Image (cartoon, rainbow, N blue to C red; front, side):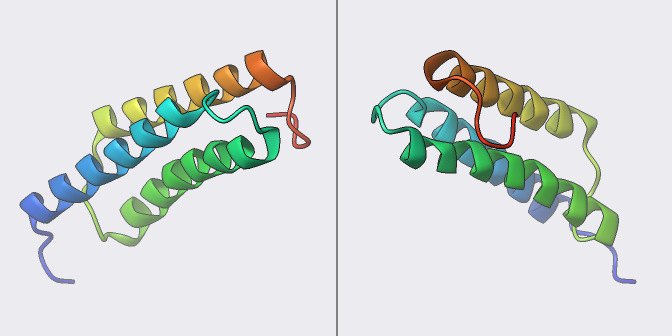
Length: 91
């Protein structure tokens, strides 16, 4: 297996966290439950994608990155639930 490039791994983590923050700021702006539910699922998928990338060895594991992504995920879910109530998946 080829050696992982630390710089690329850091850029991937940074990009995933930036995308999650971008979607976090969009919750509550559009007053459209169906449209904003998409942002909740995008953030959840970013967290799952990070786990998959680490498991497959595509990027290095970074505990602080996982904590940050999961904190953003929890905040997005709580913001959505505060505004609209529970989603159909009871997040």
